[in-house]
Amino acid sequence: MAQIQQQGDRWLVSGDMTIAQVDALLAESRALNMSGALEIDLAQVQEVDTVALSLIFEWLRHAEAGKATLTISSLPANLASLATMYGVLDLIPQASH
Image (cartoon, rainbow, N blue to C red; front, side, top):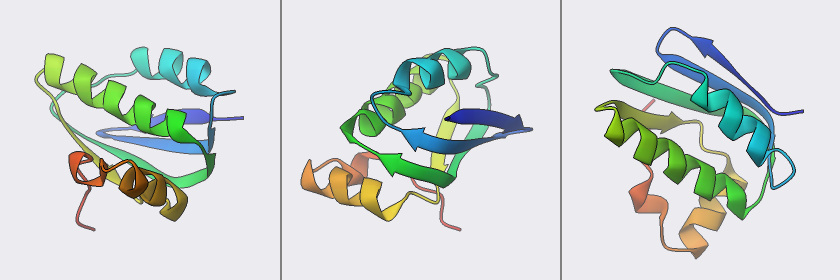
């Protein structure tokens, strides 16, 4: 089961980011605070499919609309591979740590 825990200005995403979980993750994220500078930590994400990219870009659109700055940390290798394959890796703002 996928979930998001908010810890201050960080979201900790765990579980799978796949088509089966996207609706729950999107609904959960809409209930969380997205303001200022926000880091989304994907270190605990296990399985991904292309819908994970769509979800990240939806979060980016939402952050931009709310004048928030969003970065992604611990991008899983399988998700980075998908992003590279689709030519969108450079569009994902990644944290430098």
